[in-house]
Image (cartoon, each protein chain N blue to C red):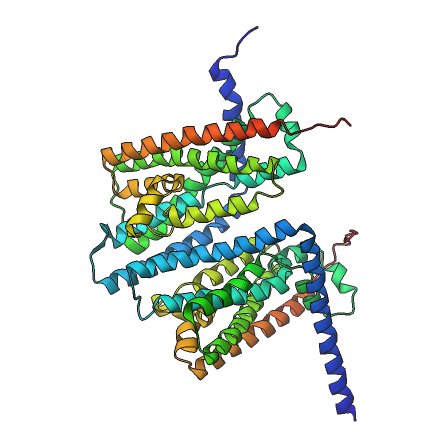
Length: 274
Length: 271
C-alpha cells in the first residue's frame, strides 16, 4: 500500500513538474509574441545562421568530396542533430546560460521560496527565442537533404534529445562552478563554446589525447560521432553510450547544483520581478 | 569668427580613441579569458586542414600550403573577432532616444563612434593576432611573412576596419525607420563569415561565387588583408587598396545620407 502511494505521489510530482515546464514555455512564447516582428526575425535569423554554416560545409565538400570517411550528408546530419538538440535545450531551458550570473547576483532567492525544484524552476523560467530557429533548422535540413528512412528518422529525433541533455547537463555543471569559484560566467560560456565548437566538426579529424578529452572533460565526442556511428552505422552500443553520457551529465549537473546550493548565500536583495 | 585648426578638431577623437583603449586594458583578465575561443578554433582548424591536406595527398591547395592556410586563418579569425559590434550600440541609442543627447555635443556623431570603434578594433586585433599567432606557430611553424607583406597587410587591415565601420554604421542608422536592426546586422555578419573568407580563403570557392564575393565589401574586410600577409605582391595590393578606398567613399556617402535623413526624424520633448 505504501508502495502504491509512493508511486502515485511520484506520478503526481512528475505531472506537476511537466505542468511547470509547459506553463513557463507557453508564458514565455506568448511574451515573446508580443513583439511579433522581432520574434520572427530572431527565429529566422538563427535559421539563416545555421544555413550559412551549412553553406560553408557544402562549399567545402564541393571542393573536397570526402574527409576521412565523412561525406557531405554526414556533416549535414551532424549540424541537423546538434542544432535540433541545442534548440530543444535552450528554447525550453533558456535560463541555463545565465545560471552563473543568477548565482553570483544572489538572484536564486526568488526561486528558493517556491515549493518546486529550484534548478528546474530556474532553468525553465526564461527561453532563448533564437534557439527556436535551431529547433526548426535540424529536422528541416535533415529530412530535406539527407532524406532518411523511418528508422533513421526516429534515430535522429532520439539522438537530438540525447544531444539536448548533454548540452544542458554540461551547461549546468559549467555554470554551477560559480558556487565554488565565484564569478565564473566567462569561464562557463567559454566551456560551452568549446563543447559546441568541437561538436560541430567531424569526429575523425580529432585523434589521440584530444579524442580522449572529447569523450571525458568536454564531451563533444558523443555528439560529433552520432552521424557516422548512430545514424549511418546504427551501432546500438554507441547509441547506448550516448544515452548514458546524457543521463550522467544531467544527473551530474543536478548533483553539483544541489551541492553548491548548500554553499549559497542570499544577497538579501529586494527586487520586483515583472 | 575663429576657425579651429584640423589638429585641434581631431584632438577630441584622438582622446576618445585613447579612453576606449584604456578601458579595454582595465579589463585585461576578462579579455584574455575570451581568447580561449580563439585558441580552440585555431586548434580545430589545424586538425581540419591537416586531415584535408593528408586526404588530398597534396602539398598545396590553390597555392596554399598547410602552414600558409593556417596562417591565413589565423589572420582572418583575428580580424573578424576584432570587429566591434558598434552597430548594436548605435541601434540602442537611436531606439532609446539617447541619440538626442549625443547630437547636442560639440563633435561629429559618426566620427566619435569611429574613434571608439578603431581603438576597440586595433586593441582586439593585436591581442587576437598574438594569441592566434602563438597557436599557429606551435601547430604549423613560423609564418612566411616579410616585413613588407606584414606592413602592407596592417595598412589593409586599418582600411578594412574603416570599411566595416561604415557598413555597420549604415545598417545601424536604419533604426531611425525600423523597429529592430538586429536582422540586418546579423545577415551582414553571416555574409562576412562565408563570402568574406573567414572560414575558407575565397580561392577555394567555385569560380562564380569567388568573382561575386571579390566585388563585395565583405571580401575587402577579411580576405584581402588576410591574404596579403602570406601572398603580398605590389600590384594585387594596390588593387585591393583601390577597392577598399572606393568602398569607404561609397559607404561613407550612404551612411552620412541615411544619418542626415534619420536625424530629421528625431523629435526632442522638453522635461
